[in-house]
Image 1: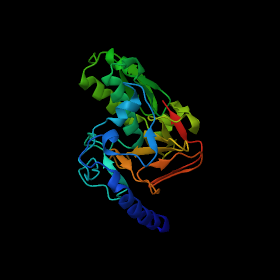
Image 2: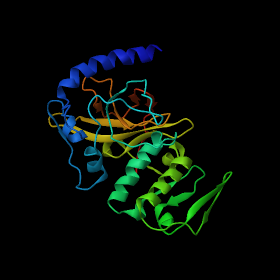
Image 3: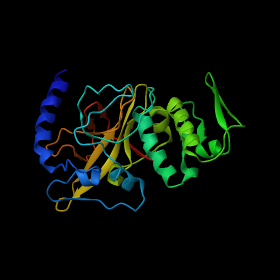
Image 4: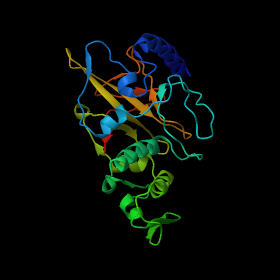
Length: 265
């Protein structure tokens, strides 16, 4: 309880400190969030996942985070909300939201062969097999492929694929298939993750570097439990919502990640 109260006090200060550097009428990360003095965004490749995240549409500034049932998230740990459609069931939680963003980026760019995720029992589920008319049949802990279903790359086949992955993947499976990364090589699109039940993951949305000192900062986003819209987190720092990038534990409003928790696709 003391930690929650302290965080609330710190967040109240940092948001007031940084709100003057938020362009409230803009609707993407790169346009809405200006940088602290002497910082510049790192360069990213055109059409990369990093660029996709920087330009992902945001809801109107001040919009609340909504849960899958339409209720508002009670813990106001966020500064902005992705325009991120949910299902009407409690499926798109933290790992699912990261999977959704990654898969939709690949789908938009027709990189169908790269859309593949493991589910919790270790089975790899490539989207290409759904394209070929196959589906996974689940019986207890056993899974098997079956033919004879709708083929193609249409949005309804893709949505069916994602709904299956949401149902059977999670932080555990995502942490097992991801690649560990050193903090020195962090890029937008990487994520800090604890794979477990419960577990959690936050996605690195943007990175900037101080032109004088070389110190780096990042924006972080998450979904949570129950299923809720993806949102950009406030931080404890006076530069909130930016976080300093340190080779140490990472304190976020709703989870603490151990050193060495950084992974990437």
